[in-house]
Image (cartoon, rainbow, N blue to C red; front, side, top):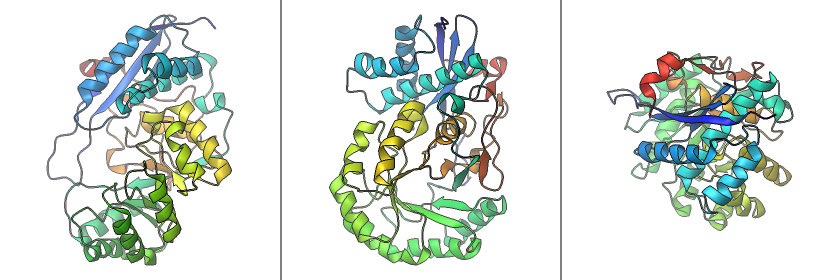
Length: 368
């Protein structure tokens, strides 16, 4: 194969206006890569609020560095990106820029060979994968509002829901009341997970975990930053629920101590931060320690989800993939091929590449 990279172009989808909704959609940064033979691939960069300009700038600098390189040498690109462009110490935004381009290169390779990306990664271990519905809200709501939202989501066929009943200002009783209302509303057929979003200390996390043991959670997520593996292991040994962390960690290097200390039960690297190759490497490292992988996916439900499914479908120790039902159709006016969720599952895709096709004309207004 001789096809080389011709263009790398970032696109910025602005955030949804903040009104009186449960949660407003954040901005998305997408990357269009085209080869000299005219093959187009699309990728997505994990994006945090207020960092759009930095992400666009990094993609553009990477573009200067990539033009003319063989499009199929994905592993070499990632190695050079870390060692040369990143100078062995890239930050979160740099890794996200890497991932967005890497995902697009897999899309190109799949289209060139006429096969789904997961076939290039060794094929499927699962005929379908489960997704869990994230119902995060940044606003304060009474327990009944949480229960109403969870009921609405469960009625769409989702059997796994993650919520955020506790903040740094929430009392134990207030958070338990929210979780109790949701649990009563959706019943025993829907499993629940709780995300603490890194707001707690080990002592508070332990107190909260013991207060909600009665709900038999799928997992307790991100009690505090995952950089302290010793404290994470302390908490894991003291609670009944499975412990999950890792969405802020980009590569296997940052996960190593968590694995060696057996500090967690599940990890959730973000697909558009770690990328496809790296998330599979993290999963391979986790497997001997009996640790499962639940790909984090606070990205678009079109491109981010497609990348997570193709990467995850070949992971033996896969746990449910994150999904945001409220933002499911956000890009439907500019793309086709979004993977559909039925009864909380996504079937293994069969379309070449990632299977998501963008309308270049419709995307013009978002080109940076």
